[in-house]
Amino acid sequence: MMAAKQTTLRDRIVLSGAGVHSNAPARLVLHPSEPNSGVSFLRTGLPGGRERMIEAKYSHVSMTELCTVLGAEGESVSTVEHLLAAFAGLGLDNVTVEVDGPELPIMDGSAADFVEAIDRTGLVQLSAARRFIKVLKTVRVENGRSFSELRPAERGLRLEVEIDFASGVIGRQKKVMDLDPASFRRDISRARTFGFIADVERLWKAGFALGASLENTVALDGERVLNPGGLRYADEFVRHKTLDAVGDLALAGAPLIGCYRSFCGGHKMNVSVLEALFADRANYQIVESQPRREAARADLGLALRAVYAPDVH
Image 1 (cartoon, rainbow, N blue to C red):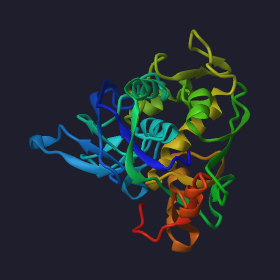
Image 2 (cartoon, one colour):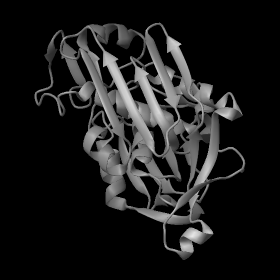
Image 3 (cartoon, rainbow, N blue to C red):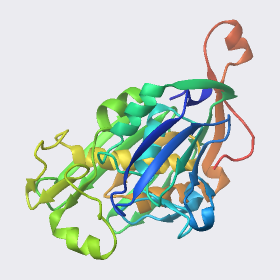
């Protein structure tokens, strides 16, 4: 994850499907983008043929109930976390996501289809150096027994995610991993969203889960998993929560160097810990990976140096 150069897609990608909450069809087009442009969503299909560009930044989050929503009501894009996780996990820095509906397609409930499409198309390196956000001070948010925090680390992003459900089929699970493309593909990319049958009627009345099915959700009925194929991982539930965290933390605007730790967290706390991080400029530093002059002459590789450039968040 400390690669020296920024990346974008080699070619555009087209995907389609329905949203898990809205059940509305959507066509997704991922466009290659310029250096330092980051990730943006181009929301098309608005009344009057209007379009709206929304940067994938924590400051543009408008809702975090059951999914992460970017943009204002009526001009928003929801359930962005799985696609953002694929970008962050594979090291894709610059891309414009064109979507013609209010919600991204859920695909199979994980990031697997996004990963497959990106891998099939491939990434290209750009001329600009990759920038990182290095956590300098621990920040923490709490809500009852739940918490999320970011702590300093020397390199990369480590995730320590723990959940605790009363349901015996889930129980208490913990996932610890260092994020890189190989571990992302292997350990969390295929972990699906999950829900309880007992909650379905309440969710429907609230306008959620209208597109949920056994094709895109791990469905739990009491202590039983209803999906005919069962689970993809014995601890698929915490792995999916880790996947969500990777996607939400991508809303920092650049890869994080730090350790993320959460207990019974979720989208709201993932975004809240970013708000806490960026509330004080002393909490973080913008760094970039590039060869030191003397290291380059000696062919000793790359070193981090601080860059006092405009904030990327």
